[in-house]
Length: 133
Length: 363
Image 1 (cartoon, chains in turn cyan, red):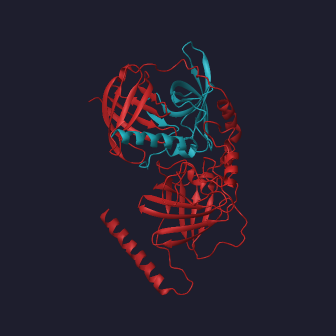
Image 2 (image 1 turned 90 degrees about the vertical axis):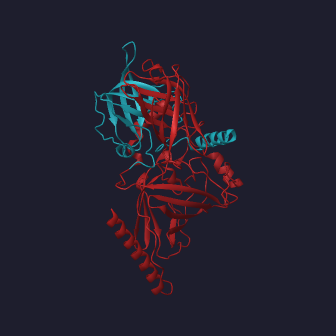
Image 3 (image 1 turned 90 degrees about the horizontal axis):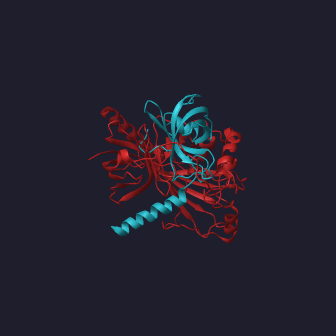
């Protein structure tokens, strides 16, 4: 069992090493996937364009200071098949944005998930499962 | 439903019978009618999205490809994205919106529609809207063809399998996202078949003696997506605006983000949890979790082929019940705690974007 576990772990790691990047078009190497952040933001703009969508929003920190962030999202094609539309986010909307921040400390992230005030959520940079229709 | 099935069976029998009849009545150089049906919109399975796992001709996995000295020199000049290069500094032709070519286009996480018309099978790729014609009318490759991005493809049916032979590629594309090169001598043979109604397998063999000391094999698995259409995709659409963002987040340096908002405690979910995980590849298994109040947690999946364990850190629950955590390998757990605090449902997302669904309750 132990050797199985090691083999499994080795396989997982090697698969991870080989298959890291290129969601849709480019990689995740700019983002620190080991530090997920949850931000409560106010939407400034959603650029819903191939090959990548881009969300700009502001966040108030604990001291009340307003900071601008940007979040990378997949292409509209991938998002629309997962329940998004171009009017999913409009300027002024309040939304919780969960994602992996830039490694270099800039206010940018790869968006993984959105949670809306009514509790429903939408996936960000997540691929559809084989079983999804 | 039953009538539909009977009609389908009758149609399948008729098609098979007609094909046999046609094959028997045609003579000389005329080809038999095709006997397979690969039509539909297909999406890459989660098991093989993004890159190829290469094997030797016997199926032994190759972590290092047997490059020739020509291939080695080309490979060294290619800078794939990864730890060393970002989308800004990589010279992967994909990042300049150049066509990925074949077989590289199979690594993109976009669907492909296969259409079959008289004398041709057509692959209509969503990524870049590239169209690949596979001529099944019995012709040969053109002599002294001018090399192209997608090459020249001819196919023949062996039962339900479409065997596609492709040559005539230019050498401007990479074989895969790891930067492995190929020459104009690239010869690719694919065997495309439906292993069941919803699953398409493509066995790929490439032979390029200028770049590699032996033929290489790999495989692609696609899932049928009824109701999907191929959508428009223009790679150049957002290059200018998005490049500014790339320059910002891709600039060198390592510094923790100054995030002074967001959850910091995992107290609300501390304890044991039990539930089910639906893996991205369609398999489901029981799962258990132990979360601590000190922002760590373990989710164990009872996969019979070997238990799979995720060790999470930075476990936190927001005021609205959003649960987040990550592993040192970059796998993320994004869940939602029910209002009564007794259920957690959410996704385990690997760094490559593949997602598993998990739902758990307190035992």
